[in-house]
Length: 337
Image 1 (cartoon, one colour):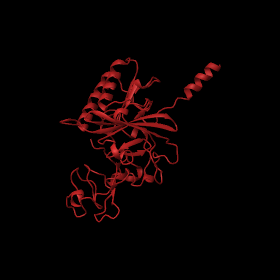
Image 2 (cartoon, one colour):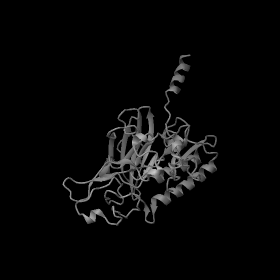
Image 3 (cartoon, helix red, strand yellow):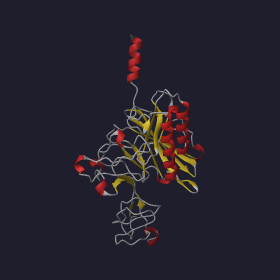
Image 4 (tube, helix red, strand yellow):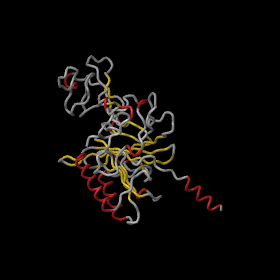
């Protein structure tokens, strides 16, 4: 009886990941019917990845996040930066989603710092045992392909994809080490560098988002500039930085990279027009790029999204926007493919 009680207690103590984009693999990650379907999903998703994050000269600069749900009060986010196909930085952010001052809370009022346990660069890269291993996203696709090919056909593989079709989870529902799954909670075209993490990452209950990325409810992670003390130049908006340039207050933000519109609709680069007057880079924050598509421009007005509202079970599916009942059709947001 004591042995049985111990086994039951041991099973009860197993903590399940809260979102399908988090590790380890949980029942939230949809199953794939068979191996051929899994291979087709992976091949299509790889095309999406290459189309979005490759140029004619090779892979673009990017960073990505892997989330591991360790306990109710501990989630570990490993952030890895890749430049020219080579990993240059790895960091571990640890958060307690249950804490009143957690950056992951939607009802957060006031500022809270992310808890960076360590940050590796140069010769120190890979020196910590904790955190996800050093891998590029292409490596993770390769590891998923290997899992599909090598695990017994009797075991059901589970896969999940972001709204654009990029792989978010590939794994098996077991208690094996991390060799039984791979994941990508978020990925974006940015490197960590000197502005990490305050101007690079935004947090929500479902994880960390790199600047420039849009959540499933239409809110976008970005940062703005504020005027330098004593500056005689124009005010700066809360619009996100595009291609390392600045905006001025009044810009509607929704202009293609390289276009810098002022309040009068003229295009110019503030940093060139007012040398030395570029503002101080602010911390990343959530903002609404297009108000009719967002659930609420204020953080306290957003709702926590359900686990399966964040992406889709197949890269071939059209992602279905999520509409609040009180929006009357105005709150739908489609993720740009």
